[in-house]
Structures are given as structure tokens and as C-alpha cells.
Amino acid sequence: MRLCFFWIRNHHAETPAGQKLRLALEHLGPVWIKFGQMLSTRQDLLPVDVAQELALLQDKVPPFEGALAKQIIETALGLNDISECFSEFDSTPLASASIAQVHSAKIITANGQVEEIVIKVIRPDIEPIIHSDLYLMQDLAKLASQFLPDGKRLRPVEVIKEYRKTLLDELDLMREGANAIQLKRNFENSEALYIPYIYSDLSRKNVLVMERIYGIPVSDLTALKAQGTNLELLAERGVQVFFTQVFRDSFFHADMHPGNIFVSYNTPHNPQYIGIDCGIVGTLNKEDKRYLAENFIAFFNRDYRKVAELHVDSGWVPAETNVEEFEFAIRTVCEPIFQKPLAEISFGHVLVNLFNTARRFNMQVQPQLVLLQKTLLYVEGLGRQLYPQLDLWKTAKPFLEQWVKDQVGPMAVLKNIQANLPFWGEKLPELPDLIYNSLKNQHKNANQPIIRNEIELKPLLLGLLACSSLVIASIFYVSANQPFAIGSFIFAAICFVCAWNKAK
Image 1: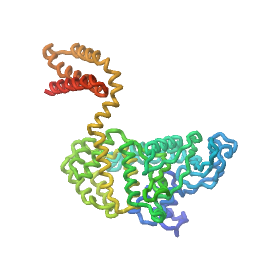
Image 2: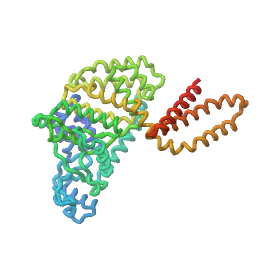
Image 3: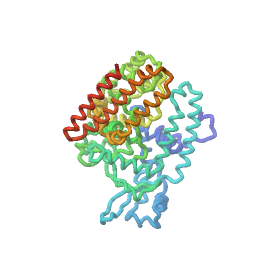
Image 4: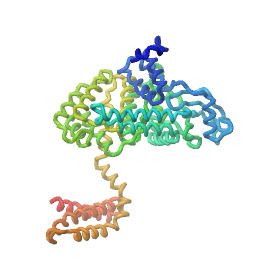
């Protein structure tokens, strides 16, 4: 195709292929730079020289002028000069990525201490470029959904819509600051992950001020080995941090490429990650989280029948899917990769088999899970680079089993009851009126003979009585007084008798 435009000179004829690809992605803009960042983590899929060249897109994108960054900061904070707020400012950026660049500075706190900070500044005029790229992607997605054989199954329009929201959110640095504060609170005093402090009072939509951190880029294996970092523990903690964010907090850093992850210089034998750039985060609703956890556990236990049934129950594959055939297909893909370290698993081969299985059983893409899948690619690629002997399944399985136990075990039931008690206590006085109105409406609307209506009312009455007794028993249960404990037992017994009679 290029030769058809023979009158256009090739200005990079002698340039290596990896550098050509990087320059092309830089020229195309921020959306494509992010695609290059993701590719750079997959050294198992790309030649090493190409992956290393694409890694420059993580924080070595050509910057804009430091004087312009200074002017943006002054305008955003309402300053006549940047020295009014910051004692020092370096106009040469520390790092430059697709949407923003970072400058080092110093600030004098209220108690007179000098603290090192960094200031993140959004690139000027970047928003129209991103909107233009997104409109193009939306048009292409519509064409793909109409004309490609897998168009409806892959749901490209919904995927781009989800991606659009994510990318536009990244342009608001106040949102990124709030995300970082939330992640920092989630991992307070954690040995596994540290999030820098955010100076919210000095942050604006296009300017973010945060604590300056010092660490080794997670992709710099030479430096990590030189300081004696425990790479096995580091890789395991990467997996644990990911699953903790997803399943415990339902709030995860969704842009975990190596440019955003560092390793602290402190305690290399007990390594700690440092996470920055929290502009893209993902969340999961309760149903998706439960289905995912059960899928992972069934997968780790090699219960492929359960995996197939969960996919059908969740609606990820059509209801008419033959479960036995689907089970066999999943076993064919997954069984060869068990009990193997990451170094011995051909990710490309597994990916092709998964795509073929998805196509065969008309498995639809779930747009709400795309961010999670992208993050899992980052984590798996990171583990592969840090410690290729890592057993991903063995590392993740205990964590997920404990999470499911906490969610569905007896203690989880008691916690849910205790959490809902204030609401139940507030509504308890209304229960007699609700029962009376329900019975009255049922009688008023009945077109059947009275005797038949009374028979139909019996299960309803028993059900309402059982629920009322359960609420009262729960309220009595949390009371420390002995008479209330006895009352809890009595009402629990009433609840059981009512439920038993209703079931009969």
C-alpha cells in the first residue's frame, strides 16, 4: 500500500522497525501511544528490540516547553509568578507521557519544612485531539459492528463508549487526585503498595501536585538485581495487590504499565511497590465481582464444568449453549497451562485458543470488564518479566478462596445483618401497617372465591411473619442483655417455624 504513494519519500528508510513503530504511534496521538504502552509490556509477543523501543512511550514521549508548563501552572493557581507558591521549579520535565508531563519542584510547608514535590501538567490543546481520535474510533466501531462477522459478539460500539469515558476522565487531574487518595487509604500501612501524598489544595483540573517519590522503575531488572531485591516476592506481591484491589476494594489501578510502577529503595528483601498516575481506575459491581471470583476458583480447582455453568448463568454466553461441549473446550485451552511457571506458558498460543473458543460459542465481550482484562495483561506481563518462574495460579488461589469464604461464610451473613440493622430497626414499626395493607389489597383485588383466596393468603402471611421475626431476632441478638438474647432465640424459632410451614 505504501508503494502506491511512490511520490512520497520514506524519511525513515534506515530506521529500525521498532523505532518506526514508536514514531508512528507518537505521531498518531495519545490514544495510540497508550496502545503502544500496553504492547511494550508483552515481550513474549514482540521482538525484544521492538518492545524496548515501545517502552519509551511510557514516560519518554517528546515534551512540550517547560516555560509553557510554568505558565499553565501560574494560570491554574492564580499566581503572578510561580515562586509565590513553590520555592523551586525545574522547567525541564522529569517525565513526559501521552497526556501530561511532570516537573519537579519544592514547597515550604506551614511549619517551615522544605518538601520535594512533583507537578503534573496536562498537555495544552490535548483535549480536541483526543475527541477527534475518539470520534474516528466510534465510526470505525459502528462499521465493524455492522459488517464484520464477529461484529455483534465483540460489541465494539459499547467497548469504545466505555473507553471514551475512561480516557476523558483521565483529562481531569482533580479526579486523578481523588483516585490516588482513595487508593492510598485502601493500602494504608501496607508493605506491598505505597501511593504518594496528594496536595489537594494546590491541585486543579489541569494541574496535580503530589509528593515526590524515589524508586527503581519496575522494568529496570538490572538495578533491581543490583540492590538485591527479592524478585520472587516482588512478583507475588504484584499479583496479590491486583487481586486485593479488584476483589477486596472493587477499586483498582487500571493503568499499571511499567512507567507508572516503581519499587522502593527501602528494604529490598521486603520490596514495596510505589504506584503513580491513578487517572484510570476500574470498579466492578457486586454481581460481576462474585462471578469472577467463583470463575477463578473453579478454574484453579480445574472444575471446568463449574466454569462453563457460571458463564451461562452470568449471561456471558447464550443460554442455549451446550454446557458439556463448552466444558470440553475450556479444558482443552486451560489444562495444558496448569502447574507451569509463566516462562513455560506461550501467552500468544493461549490467547489464540481463547479467541477461537469465544468465537465458537458466541461469547460476547463484556465492556465493563475490558479495563480489568487490560490490567490483568499488565500484571501477567509484569510477573513474567520480574520472575518467570512465578506460579500465577498458586499465588492467587489462596487469596481468592479466603475472599469467597469471607463473602459467603457465616461471619459474612452476620456482618450483613449487623450492617442492615439500623435500616431494619427504622422500618420495624411500619411492618404491621405493611402486612395489613398487603392483606387488604390482596383481598380487594381477588376474583377468586373467598376460601381459595384464604388459601393463597396463607403463604404470604407466613412469609411476612417469618421476615418480621427474623428482623426482631437480629435486633435482639446484638443486645448484650440476657432477656434480649432469650427473645432473639424465641423469634428465631418463630421465623424457622413460619418458613418451614410456608415451604410445605
